[in-house]
Length: 408
Image (tube, rainbow, N blue to C red; front, side, top):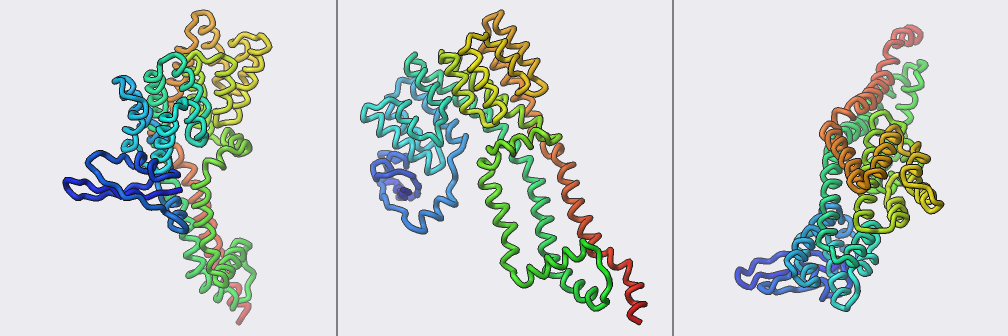
């Protein structure tokens, strides 16, 4: 349930409003970050207002996670009580969801529940690898260090994702403009062109007929013009679910520019997770299982699952990597070589972190140039759309003379 908390500063009278996604008013006060010099008024957001608020509110993201874990690490380093540490994070996060879960976890901790057990209830925010790291940190008494490592790893991922998203803005705008031009011409130019060509009773190219049919449908049912807009909105909103489909992920690996970005991204996240888990003294088979579960690409999910099975059957880690190296693409042999070095030197976590850092550096470089990498694809798509429009409109012009002579 969404709750609106209006805070009023007792000294200045200045008001501010915060939305918290939680179940009770007391938790809403915690999630709002209320200070001793503020008064609060809590009200429920219900019905259509709640639906609109959820649709327009900021979703929980990596930035909130980074802010919370880094803030908790600083608080634990200074021996601030654990419940108070969570209370202090409410003003560091921005989304109603994160404010609510901070209040929920703080409440569970005040009831004597373990932090890892409380966070494990929020599966859409705290993934199994994070829960496993927190459990290991609780058992070893190294929570500040674990939180710093989680925050640092999430911060790197967040920075790269921001660069990739910003690089995709230009291609997205160009394609949207192209679709807008097609729809606009279907309402304006094409109807006039249809009247002219129909009166001449001349044979028209297939592209022109298709455009005329499309225009006729839009004129009779204008609401259909909203379908591409709604389709694009749903596409971008559900991109996470779409990109999780194995067939779509396999398609990514076949695209010339995208395949490298996909492999580097999946490998960086997976090997960073595995390194953190092993460094936190999580059992190797369990670490591989958690890494497989949290890998977003199905090739790497399958790779770590199969490596875990080899480990359980008594195979060494370098040999298990070598047997399944085909899942890692062109870099499979290189990674196997590093794992052999790790087995000889005992520097497994260092080399896993090195693999992750190398991929992150390459991703960082690619993210800075993503617009240049995607530009050729954008030009091809836009050129195809414009070329088809020009051909459909002007191809019949070249046969106008014959049609007029026949009519005479």
